[in-house]
Image (cartoon, rainbow, N blue to C red; front, side, top):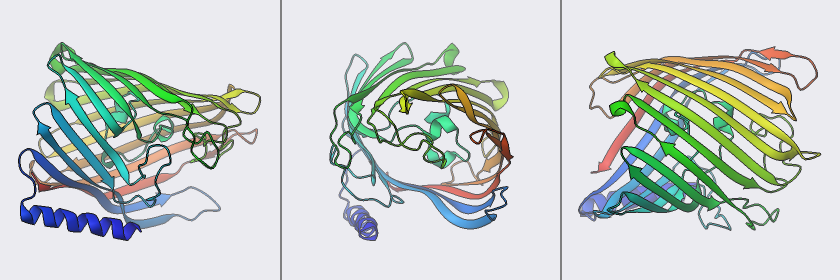
Length: 358
């Protein structure tokens, strides 16, 4: 089914481009990342591994219907599921699909499937530009169908969202009963030298839904009771002279009543970045401090970092190369004593951003 879907999209793109089916302000892009990855798991039971892979591949359709109405659609070409969601009628293959109307007052109204606004500078990156991810980021919700309102004022952007929430409320059959919501702020201060970002987001979850621990292979991997996932995120970007950019995030996730006895799971992540942004190359160091707690008791702690460089032969090239070394120290306390390991990864590859139509 997936091979057929991708083939149909490729055929459609080729046909429309050859026939000049688009006119006006419309674009079709394909963005991907591929390369070689080495993984040292620092484990007595799991072997080290290395492989060539494609870890990001998306195609996007965007354009302006008129000066105040724009559309955007993204398909995830690596998504394995084409099953339709019983609540919003989209599959995971449709990563984003929305239309935006902008009014003269600076108010924007967006309807459709898009990213849930979480806040923090790190969440504002594309997955094609991430290597290690924080525990907080790993727990953020999938894109949802809903309504987004934005208001521009004096260089600031205020955001409010209302979107589908506990879609698995009926167990095996999706039966939504509550919506999620988010309020946030994209800031721009001192002529763009300082860019804060902050958000407060609530995602209602049903009993039996996955917790943030499922991806980590830890327990409890499903919720004992229904409750809200509360995301609080604040970040700051400093654009200093001489092309040096500093970024920092402080984020907290509280999964209310996720543990038996109406107890909470809590995840705290701190992320910092220093990057030099030259015309053709960008060396950077990114650090992570993560901690998880089960009912107030520390269950997991991690310090991790990425050190790498991204570069292009020419600034306008569609291909960007990267070499990144990722290291971490993970401490697990779930057995009652500290268990420590230090996994490592190396990424060598490239990202491409090809415009099929522009």
